[in-house]
Amino acid sequence: MNPISLTLGFNPAPNTKSLIDGSVRPKGVELRVQTRFSEGFDNVGARHRKIIPPPCTREHAIELLEKGELDAALEPYQTLSSNPRLRLIFPDYRKVEEEFFRRTGAFPINHLLVLREHIAEAHPWIVESLLTAFREAEALAERYRNEEEKKEAAWERKVMGEEFSYSLKKGCARRSLATLIEYQIQQGILDQRPDIESLFFPQALDL
Image (cartoon, rainbow, N blue to C red; front, side, top):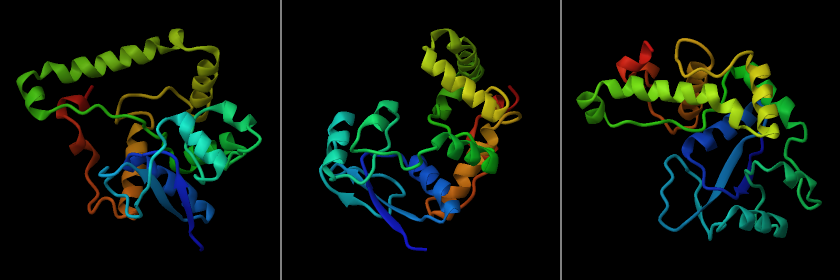
């Protein structure tokens, strides 16, 4: 397998790099990601780091991509596909995303809320309160989405076969975390495989 070296136009967190790398390896591609960093920026787990001036904005990243100064960019904008100078790495990206879910059962998690232990110890009620607030917000989200966002959410429900659940007991959240951990073990970012339950406050596990 000949590795492909790409300079990507974004500063990813370690989990973003792990998911990208883990997603393409089954297709026979090994990525050595040379990400653009600001001087002194420390990105844990980036073993192939190259210090060069970063894009100042998303628009700047697209400009650099058009000039050939970037090989690729992680950008969520559908309008970019109409740019004659750019093309999607995966033209049928919906099929690729669906295949990824069917193969792993994982739905990539974008964000996690971290709470300091001393706060939870001093105010035990706050864990349940925060989790309830997020679940209520998710239930109300549909009324605030535009038509494009509603289509995106409907497609996600179709692929997963259910709504995303803030729970380790049902849905794909546990599989998503397990997949991310497995990728980071393979890539040398984690030395040991943590127990998933140990990452959460005990009172959250039964909610």
